[in-house]
Image 1 (cartoon, rainbow, N blue to C red):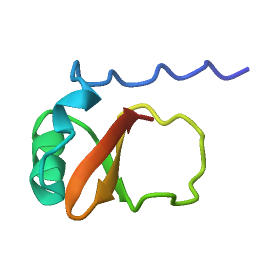
Image 2: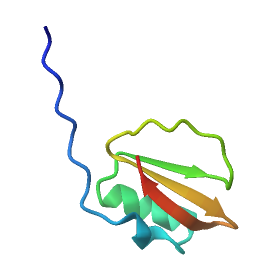
Image 3: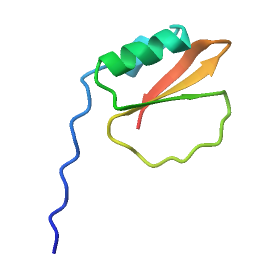
Image 4: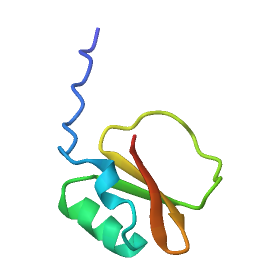
Length: 71
């Protein structure tokens, strides 16, 4: 039986730090801080809810991050 892979570590970063930033600035900053995937979504977007280590999600309203969460 194959070993279970160890997930890579997530950046020690608070998603709340991105709320209020311009979406492009927030994405650039998140990538600098080590997030491997950054996903910008419109309000109410239908998305899959599986948790992905290293992914940061932004809800973008009027060009600014209104909400941010891991996974």
